[in-house]
Image (tube, rainbow, N blue to C red; front, side, top):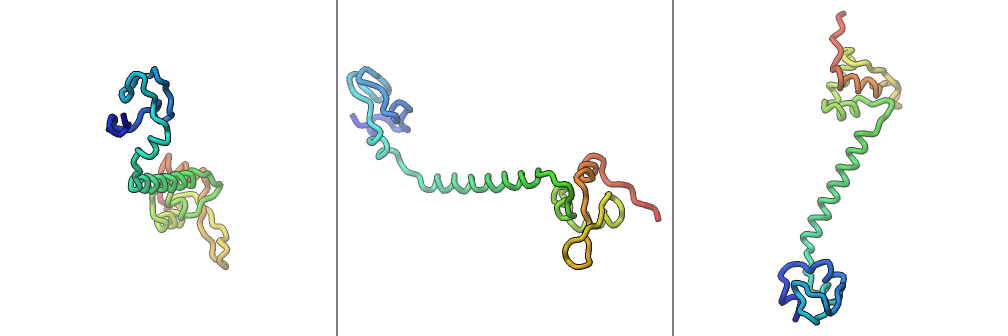
Length: 140
């Protein structure tokens, strides 16, 4: 009796491992018949390249998302306005305006591009913004 003739689905764990003896009676075995060998099953199992490619693409997407989460959750002492904007879900321009208007506590630091300096926010300030929101507008 051939495994392909008796089983429309995938082989069971005992069939794949070649386990069982002549006394084992399973859905595909008659009394006194031995379990099929692994070599017989590997040739009978279909190969699905499309399914493997799909799984591979999904795995790559998951790895990319995981790396992105790790980068987002990495705690730094200071964040640029672009990094803070990404973490808060705002535009970088909005963050720079909040810094300029005094809506957040920020400092200017050298950016390495000549004389210009850029705004940076501390980690504690980011947490405060998330918890309490913006500071009121300063009156001039």
